[in-house]
Length: 483
Image (cartoon, rainbow, N blue to C red):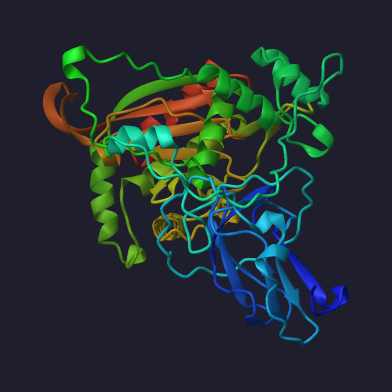
């Protein structure tokens, strides 16, 4: 029995810490049942598909229950912590009275805990409403039981069967995943989703819905496509003489859970590849004059304290090319069957971080001077490397640059960031023999690759944009003459 009235207990629900996100994983709890909390105190750290953020509690009281252990993925709108706001200091309920949702299954696989990250600015935004069932991925921690290994596996590893373990206490059954519609029932889906499924050749009766009231979403269709195109790995049996001994090396493989930023990136890339018809064009250009200008700008007092590199001038060149060819800065509205031309440029920069590849963007980059753009690029890169990029910084991009040259790669065929119509890949800049003024000379050369959505960018428009970027980098004075 609880020792407080229901009216004194407040349930803190998982907020939507990013625009349109539906779930988040609890990385770390900073409080335990019985602890006193105050309004604005950070109680846990969560990771979404966009970033890791800390959640502050919005009221004072004493922690009653933590409804989910660390490592659990929780839907937005689901209560994650109970707080007694009546001023009492009730002890936590016995284990038998804990909600079933807070008790991880005994046989769940464990993961290595994540290292504590650096401090982050607390974020708390509006609550969302989720009606689908909670999906959990228990993580190894102080409250998670050690997983049981099957007798067959232990016998294979140790050469003998283990002692029979004590029978575990019965656990509450996990909520069942939403099932596909029964035979004869028409799957619930909006017209744009039905058209998407038809275009991709997906039978909606085979798709598991995750939307409210069993509605199939675009993400469900993309997930079905991804599952269909991902072949099961086929392992050929080893020759008899090469069979591993009974006691073999168990460290030859490492399995990494797909979640957070990596999970979101994978889903976005699959969705982009199967919805937008990609076309990629290439051009190799002499950027010797651009490299000289970079060195001159480094010594200019207007850029004192700022990072000046080739990416700065490449970014400016792309912004000028977009101004000369504005129709490339657009998106495809499937539901309305419209092309939406943007009269602003939120310039995305692909950045590799410990959490995976993210694409934060510089808002209204088209309106910035060259020194302002240098400062924005420096801040964007530094924030991404520190793992502090906010979800808002990754929303609303219109066009992206990915610099594969920093890895020594000459070029690539980049996949569009979802919702954008073009992405520019920049290859390594290195000396190559080049015909210059009628003679073969060593020049600084790079290869640019522009991928674009062929539904709204035809070959002529895409070629003009790429040619303009190349022309500016070959003769950077065009930054002035074409401005």
